[in-house]
Image (cartoon, rainbow over all chains, first blue to last red; front, top):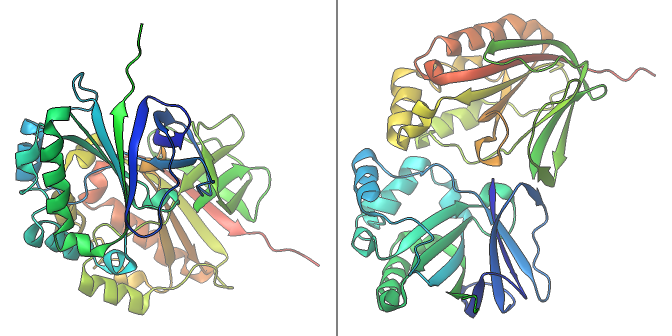
Length: 187
Length: 187
């Protein structure tokens, strides 16, 4: 099952901003739909007023046993009622990153960048899910998705600012920051 | 880009046998076509007289730097003229395997099962490529593909017999062994 993010004119999330952090921008669209899909057709090239990104929630690549237990104990599921703010941050890392071996990437990811250890304090306020998309083609390696309640917005800013200063992030060569608000159906 | 293996009535490879090693068999088909595809539609359920399996050549998950250098120095590319024998061995590993962390899997894969070290001596005679399919849905986690010249057939038997005795292989809960001969176009 693939997770499909479609930027366009309708969807359950209203887009409040689309900011290119590094590299080419994505066209602004007013809405985002998030669905599960059983098919992919490449190429995933954005058109002038719509785009779609596809990923898959895969096996964690770097988490060790003790970290897995810590994360499981503290993390929140997606879809919480009050979590009406969201962010979709698609990322592509450089060829230099992918030329590294698994253990070399793990060293940068955790031993030097403390990706897991230093993000634990943002849980469970920020719920997040990583979708892998490198192997599915398309312009990004990962689609990162975050949900939080509006009062936790500044906490979320702190989280992304912290990650962007790590050594791991020096390998990011394309990053877009899409901010969203859940559409409320009125009676 | 996805690698698509279609079992059916035509294709560049003639099927000589399809053996279920562990778990459900795949229907016998006389031919296999191997192509690159830009689309996937799930579900990948085999019909009575045809099936298709899709995978992607991804980043190696366990290879460390020194191993990568050894492998690069000695391995052969697919598509060698004399390599007219092939095997497609789709594999699914158990949930117990996927519940392990990356470092726990690496320990079983190399420290205990010597997957890389003990297969080095079969290179370059046996050319091989691993295609990942777990994240693409379908019945298998991996599609393993091997090409060799007919005189190396017994060497290949030795390789698969050796792998099937490792601790790593105790996690394999579905395995099919498809043997193939390249179709020669006659003038």
